Image 1 (tube, helix red, strand yellow):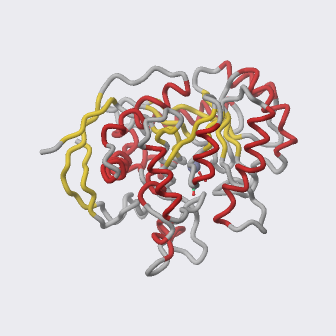
Image 2 (cartoon, rainbow, N blue to C red; image 1 turned 90 degrees about the vertical axis):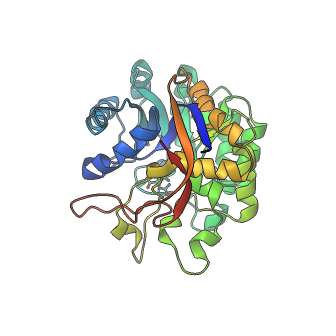
Length: 343
Ligand code: NCD
Ligand code: ZN
């Protein structure tokens, strides 16, 4: 049987929530990854080092005893974040970045930043103390077409931020467009990007053609085929600026299959399988290890992992849902076949 063995990978963009959802999803991620950057968009958001450390304990409690997993915590930037909190975060070995959500851009972003210029003193402090800024790169202007919101963010805010803080390390999270890929490629070595499995595998037809498919709805929204091709090219190029970030976002099935379904795709159950499929289709399986296991660690200045994981070329069917006791999370590719399986 064909197999693929790579250094144990990390997930550089992950949502795990709390409580029963956390209990359901944590075993999936801990099986696949050694570490993950944990997104802070809880309700209420994780804005202080103290909150992040207690959230970290809750996550560790949800990791099955036979698995080794390290959560890498982040803080949510708001208009009220202080330079003092940034210094505290820099001083904590468990906090690795700050996340910038433009207010209203995505799930649980109400506390996000309404005026990016108003947080310039915070960005200056982050640049000075060399802690990365993770960006949800979409404008929230209602007049801006939803398919253009990332490009508009790149043209305005991102260009400004990287010009005004040339030393700041920035991850443009979940890039979805040719323009964002181009921006990251042309920028300095301190600017990187994560790419999700859904943006590598699907174009926008997967949301809208032949019926509306809420489980393919995430933000930034999946774009047209030419953008998908640019993302595949970037991910499989061997350029260390592009690395794995699933953006796996567990939402209850009932909130996705809804007249106003929420944004986010759950992919932690089969993250490596999904990426392997995308890389194999591009005839670039040899590039998966750098993307999944090396470049993110190098960017965050963490040691590369030592163990390995092995995937087998074998067909299996993704279950319709995950969860117990009435909790139901519909995974990406539910009821569909995958051609790789993690051993
Ligand atoms: C994420 C979530 O559900 O937390 N949703 C999504 O569509 N990606 C938030 C985010 O990363 O935008
Ligand atoms: Zn996310």
